[in-house]
Amino acid sequence: LPTMSKGASRTGEQAWAKVPKVNGEFFALTYGAMVTQLVRDFEDVDEVNKQLEKMGYNIGIRLIDEFLAKSGINGACQNHREVADVIAKVAFKMFLGVVADVTNWNAEKNSFCLVLYENPLTEFVELPTEMTGLVYSNIICGTIRGALEMLQIRAECRFIRDTLKGDEVNEIQVNIIEVMEEQMGDDYNDNS
Image (cartoon, rainbow, N blue to C red):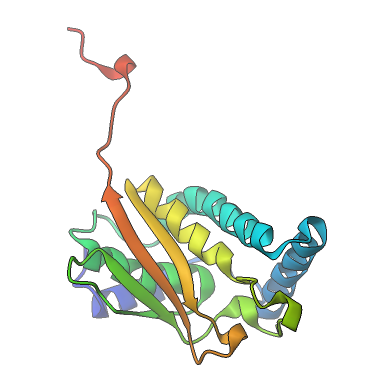
């Protein structure tokens, strides 16, 4: 793994250059239409938040394969700091075209925040007052959680600051709950 931060930024730029691009406005408007449909279907902001997170989780468990194949990351991260840098500088750049800053580590080094100064999902979006509880970009949290779980890292993610709610930046808190051990099923036991 390259030296993190500067190396991760370079790796993120290289990964961004390799992936096909979608028009940013089209992407933002399509996502907005999907969120609008969820709001109509569920008529409950909390349920829409759950559905966005669940959709993101399902994306994350599939997206990790593409990430590993195209990102140039060829080794396991050695610690949580490297995990955070790869998410912030490589994954966000590769899939959203933006980078995040990693901040607010706790003393145990298992919780950090990702600060996004730009969020391509929120272009052209204003939340109506009756939707203040909506976590519009919650799909990102689910994607992070799903991708990490496929790497045997159980995590919780949540937005703690959101530009759609008047904050200056978007901030996602990531809590690493555990690093799971890979387990083989009984079918894989060596019976020789």
